[in-house]
Image (cartoon, rainbow, N blue to C red):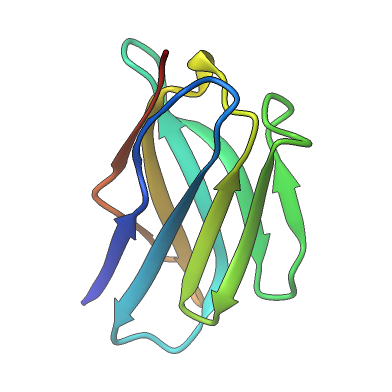
Length: 115
């Protein structure tokens, strides 16, 4: 069983920063890639950023230059979010892809950007 625990969401003013973290636990051999998705009310879930086990990263155009994804260790991923905008408001989900192709999701953490 694989579990993902997210933390770091909250309320922040426009222009502010937040750091999300996601820790994976359970029985698995290795993680191929870790990612953050988000889903705003009334919208589909969208990919925000990914990082592979080789350290390659990719970002949605809407967050390039403002968000940074990284791995603190083999089982923990973070998303540093700077210069936050109201349109960044969403529930943010952590996702991992294990060796073998299985995907797992976290429970989600709310990020609200508002003055």
